Image 1 (cartoon, rainbow, N blue to C red):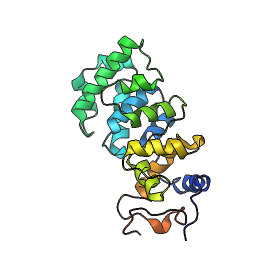
Image 2: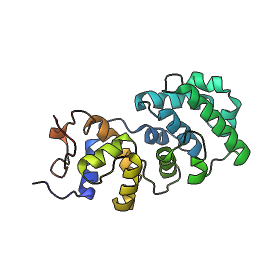
Image 3: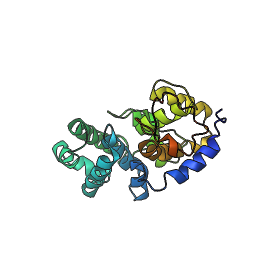
Amino acid sequence: MKQPFDIDLAMERIREAVRPFPKAALFALADEGFDSPFELLIACIISIRTRDEVSAPLARRLFARARTPAEMGRLTGVEIDALIDTATFHAPKARQIHEIARRVVEEHACKLPCDADVLLSFPGVGPKCANLVLGIACDQPRIGVDVHVHRVTNRWGYVRARTPEGTTAALEAKLPLRYWVEINRLLVPFGKHICTGRLPRCSTCPVLEMCRQVGVVAHR
Protein backbone atom coordinates (compact mmCIF):
# COMPACT_ATOMS: atom_id res chain seq x y z
CA MET A 1 0.00 0.00 0.00
CA LYS A 2 1.32 3.43 -0.97
CA GLN A 3 2.25 5.91 1.74
CA PRO A 4 0.49 9.29 1.82
CA PHE A 5 2.34 11.80 -0.38
CA ASP A 6 4.62 13.91 1.82
CA ILE A 7 5.62 16.92 -0.29
CA ASP A 8 8.27 18.07 2.22
CA LEU A 9 10.00 14.69 2.15
CA ALA A 10 9.60 14.46 -1.63
CA MET A 11 11.24 17.83 -2.24
CA GLU A 12 14.08 17.01 0.16
CA ARG A 13 14.80 13.72 -1.58
CA ILE A 14 14.49 15.16 -5.08
CA ARG A 15 16.98 17.93 -4.27
CA GLU A 16 19.55 15.22 -3.65
CA ALA A 17 18.47 13.06 -6.58
CA VAL A 18 18.89 15.84 -9.18
CA ARG A 19 22.18 17.18 -7.84
CA PRO A 20 24.29 15.33 -10.47
CA PHE A 21 22.19 16.56 -13.39
CA PRO A 22 22.35 19.85 -15.33
CA LYS A 23 20.14 22.60 -13.96
CA ALA A 24 16.98 23.74 -15.73
CA ALA A 25 18.00 26.31 -18.35
CA LEU A 26 16.52 29.47 -16.85
CA PHE A 27 17.86 28.69 -13.38
CA ALA A 28 21.29 27.94 -14.84
CA LEU A 29 21.32 31.20 -16.79
CA ALA A 30 20.22 33.17 -13.72
CA ASP A 31 23.05 31.61 -11.71
CA GLU A 32 25.46 32.77 -14.44
CA GLY A 33 24.28 36.37 -14.03
CA PHE A 34 21.65 36.52 -16.78
CA ASP A 35 19.08 37.22 -14.11
CA SER A 36 17.18 40.32 -15.19
CA PRO A 37 13.47 39.98 -16.03
CA PHE A 38 14.23 40.91 -19.65
CA GLU A 39 17.03 38.36 -20.08
CA LEU A 40 15.03 35.55 -18.53
CA LEU A 41 11.96 36.40 -20.59
CA ILE A 42 13.99 36.27 -23.80
CA ALA A 43 15.64 33.01 -22.71
CA CYS A 44 12.24 31.51 -21.96
CA ILE A 45 10.91 32.45 -25.38
CA ILE A 46 13.93 30.78 -27.00
CA SER A 47 13.33 27.66 -24.88
CA ILE A 48 9.72 27.08 -25.98
CA ARG A 49 9.54 23.64 -27.63
CA THR A 50 13.33 23.57 -27.63
CA ARG A 51 15.51 21.38 -25.43
CA ASP A 52 17.54 23.09 -22.71
CA GLU A 53 20.70 21.67 -24.24
CA VAL A 54 19.95 23.77 -27.32
CA SER A 55 18.20 26.82 -25.89
CA ALA A 56 20.65 27.73 -23.12
CA PRO A 57 23.70 28.03 -25.45
CA LEU A 58 21.58 30.03 -27.90
CA ALA A 59 20.55 32.43 -25.12
CA ARG A 60 24.19 32.88 -24.15
CA ARG A 61 25.13 33.55 -27.77
CA LEU A 62 22.38 36.14 -28.13
CA PHE A 63 23.27 37.83 -24.85
CA ALA A 64 26.89 38.09 -25.97
CA ARG A 65 25.57 40.53 -28.58
CA ALA A 66 22.73 42.16 -26.65
CA ARG A 67 21.60 41.92 -23.04
CA THR A 68 19.40 44.96 -22.55
CA PRO A 69 16.19 45.97 -24.32
CA ALA A 70 17.98 48.90 -25.96
CA GLU A 71 20.81 46.70 -27.25
CA MET A 72 18.36 44.04 -28.45
CA GLY A 73 16.24 46.63 -30.19
CA ARG A 74 19.24 47.82 -32.19
CA LEU A 75 19.61 44.37 -33.71
CA THR A 76 17.46 43.51 -36.68
CA GLY A 77 15.08 40.59 -36.66
CA VAL A 78 17.36 38.89 -39.17
CA GLU A 79 20.36 39.31 -36.87
CA ILE A 80 18.44 37.89 -33.90
CA ASP A 81 17.23 35.00 -36.04
CA ALA A 82 20.79 34.14 -37.04
CA LEU A 83 21.82 34.01 -33.39
CA ILE A 84 19.01 31.63 -32.36
CA ASP A 85 18.84 29.70 -35.62
CA THR A 86 18.72 26.20 -34.11
CA ALA A 87 15.78 26.93 -31.82
CA THR A 88 12.40 25.55 -32.81
CA PHE A 89 10.36 28.25 -34.63
CA HIS A 90 13.42 30.54 -34.54
CA ALA A 91 12.13 33.01 -37.14
CA PRO A 92 8.87 33.94 -35.37
CA LYS A 93 10.71 33.92 -32.05
CA ALA A 94 13.22 36.42 -33.45
CA ARG A 95 10.37 38.71 -34.47
CA GLN A 96 8.79 38.34 -31.03
CA ILE A 97 12.05 39.14 -29.27
CA HIS A 98 12.60 42.23 -31.40
CA GLU A 99 9.05 43.45 -30.76
CA ILE A 100 9.35 42.88 -27.01
CA ALA A 101 12.62 44.83 -26.91
CA ARG A 102 11.05 47.68 -28.85
CA ARG A 103 8.05 47.86 -26.53
CA VAL A 104 10.14 47.71 -23.36
CA VAL A 105 12.21 50.64 -24.63
CA GLU A 106 9.22 52.70 -25.73
CA GLU A 107 6.64 51.81 -23.09
CA HIS A 108 8.71 51.03 -19.99
CA ALA A 109 11.77 53.28 -20.22
CA CYS A 110 14.08 50.36 -21.10
CA LYS A 111 13.27 48.40 -17.94
CA LEU A 112 10.93 45.43 -18.00
CA PRO A 113 8.71 45.62 -14.89
CA CYS A 114 7.91 42.67 -12.66
CA ASP A 115 4.27 42.75 -13.65
CA ALA A 116 2.33 39.71 -14.87
CA ASP A 117 -0.07 41.77 -16.99
CA VAL A 118 2.83 43.43 -18.81
CA LEU A 119 4.60 40.13 -19.44
CA LEU A 120 1.45 38.44 -20.73
CA SER A 121 0.77 41.35 -23.08
CA PHE A 122 3.82 40.47 -25.17
CA PRO A 123 3.48 38.24 -28.23
CA GLY A 124 4.41 34.62 -27.58
CA VAL A 125 4.47 34.95 -23.77
CA GLY A 126 2.20 32.59 -21.85
CA PRO A 127 1.70 31.79 -18.16
CA LYS A 128 4.69 29.44 -17.94
CA CYS A 129 7.23 32.03 -19.10
CA ALA A 130 5.58 34.83 -17.14
CA ASN A 131 5.61 32.81 -13.93
CA LEU A 132 9.20 31.66 -14.38
CA VAL A 133 10.38 35.24 -14.93
CA LEU A 134 8.42 36.55 -11.96
CA GLY A 135 9.60 33.70 -9.75
CA ILE A 136 13.29 33.66 -10.67
CA ALA A 137 14.02 37.30 -11.49
CA CYS A 138 11.47 39.05 -9.30
CA ASP A 139 11.31 36.79 -6.22
CA GLN A 140 7.55 36.49 -6.52
CA PRO A 141 5.85 33.23 -5.46
CA ARG A 142 4.92 31.82 -8.87
CA ILE A 143 4.68 28.28 -10.22
CA GLY A 144 6.18 27.67 -13.66
CA VAL A 145 4.39 24.62 -15.02
CA ASP A 146 6.09 23.07 -18.03
CA VAL A 147 5.71 19.57 -19.46
CA HIS A 148 7.83 18.06 -16.67
CA VAL A 149 6.04 19.71 -13.74
CA HIS A 150 2.69 18.84 -15.33
CA ARG A 151 3.58 15.19 -15.97
CA VAL A 152 5.39 14.47 -12.70
CA THR A 153 2.92 16.03 -10.27
CA ASN A 154 0.01 14.28 -11.98
CA ARG A 155 1.91 10.98 -12.12
CA TRP A 156 2.50 11.28 -8.39
CA GLY A 157 -1.23 11.72 -7.90
CA TYR A 158 -0.43 14.93 -6.01
CA VAL A 159 -2.75 16.82 -8.37
CA ARG A 160 -5.16 15.74 -11.08
CA ALA A 161 -5.38 17.97 -14.13
CA ARG A 162 -5.53 17.43 -17.87
CA THR A 163 -3.65 20.55 -18.91
CA PRO A 164 -0.66 22.58 -17.66
CA GLU A 165 -3.08 25.41 -16.90
CA GLY A 166 -5.15 23.05 -14.78
CA THR A 167 -2.04 21.79 -13.04
CA THR A 168 -0.99 25.37 -12.29
CA ALA A 169 -4.32 26.09 -10.62
CA ALA A 170 -4.26 22.79 -8.70
CA LEU A 171 -0.72 23.39 -7.44
CA GLU A 172 -1.53 26.95 -6.44
CA ALA A 173 -4.33 25.55 -4.28
CA LYS A 174 -2.22 22.80 -2.67
CA LEU A 175 1.54 23.29 -2.91
CA PRO A 176 3.14 25.11 0.05
CA LEU A 177 4.20 28.60 -0.98
CA ARG A 178 7.85 27.91 -0.14
CA TYR A 179 8.05 25.45 -3.04
CA TRP A 180 6.32 27.48 -5.74
CA VAL A 181 9.50 28.59 -7.51
CA GLU A 182 11.64 25.60 -6.55
CA ILE A 183 9.29 22.97 -7.96
CA ASN A 184 10.23 23.89 -11.53
CA ARG A 185 13.94 24.00 -10.70
CA LEU A 186 13.74 20.47 -9.29
CA LEU A 187 11.19 18.75 -11.50
CA VAL A 188 12.75 19.73 -14.83
CA PRO A 189 15.92 17.66 -14.24
CA PHE A 190 13.90 15.06 -12.30
CA GLY A 191 11.49 14.71 -15.22
CA LYS A 192 14.30 14.53 -17.76
CA HIS A 193 16.47 11.96 -16.04
CA ILE A 194 14.35 9.94 -13.59
CA CYS A 195 10.59 10.43 -13.99
CA THR A 196 10.84 10.44 -17.78
CA GLY A 197 7.91 10.62 -20.15
CA ARG A 198 8.41 7.13 -21.51
CA LEU A 199 9.81 4.24 -19.46
CA PRO A 200 10.23 6.19 -16.20
CA ARG A 201 13.04 4.90 -14.00
CA CYS A 202 10.75 4.00 -11.13
CA SER A 203 13.25 1.57 -9.61
CA THR A 204 15.63 4.47 -8.90
CA CYS A 205 12.96 6.99 -7.87
CA PRO A 206 13.44 8.46 -4.38
CA VAL A 207 9.68 8.92 -3.89
CA LEU A 208 8.44 5.61 -5.29
CA GLU A 209 6.75 4.53 -2.08
CA MET A 210 4.57 7.66 -2.20
CA CYS A 211 3.97 7.88 -5.95
CA ARG A 212 0.65 6.65 -7.32
CA GLN A 213 2.31 6.02 -10.72
CA VAL A 214 -0.74 7.40 -12.51
CA GLY A 215 -0.63 6.37 -16.16
CA VAL A 216 2.58 4.37 -15.84
CA VAL A 217 2.27 1.16 -17.84
CA ALA A 218 5.93 0.18 -17.98
CA HIS A 219 8.92 1.27 -15.97
CA ARG A 220 12.53 0.49 -15.22
